[in-house]
Length: 319
Image (tube, rainbow, N blue to C red; front, side):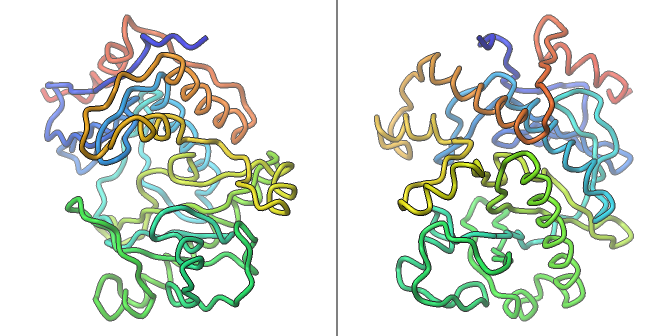
């Protein structure tokens, strides 16, 4: 059983400069133009924090590390160091204002997903034309990019076409061509490795930024269960034939539990039972082991996770 007391609820460390506290990450900008990104165990949905999930931050940081280590030949990334299992020190980048979503299947549930829009009768989306007669969760002839605007101010991401991206000056033609090339190559690598693990990488989102020299790098995370959809390959054919939802790493256990009991956008969040927290933690751990092919080894050093993080980040403290 997971120790439900081993959580990193926050990483507010006063000795570190220039803090920025996000929904799930606590970040600090260092004087040398690097940034400390600490993945807490907070889980967010409905524009609010629902709970803390033991080892979630470590799992996501280490899955991203697994993929960063295996894609450096395709594109450089922001990583400079991993001083702690929950922490990345990365280059501070200027984030490009377009989120690059790559999709290999007609899938999804959000308003910007191609399945949702297809079922409403749309046949031209994101600059791509779709034929009639496609089924839910059907493989596309080839992966496509479905870009959206990146809402930095808490607004909603909006669908874009390549022509709109260039016309609006969000990216130059050269930048769009480069990020498209990189994203499709990353997705191909991801699908290849996932297939070796008995998984289907269905879709994913990438965040890119530029460094001081204008080079394009991958930022944030890559191919984690929070940024990507994975299906279990051996169970996909039957699910597709019957029209069922293909089995996946279901990140929505807590979301569904809360949504069934209140209006999560307006009402107070009810206390979430320990067994739901426990199950969600195990889903993240299972995802790590399935994706990487390695056992998950939790770091339980330190009196608390925050004590461990503080100790490992002491070299970065402001003098």
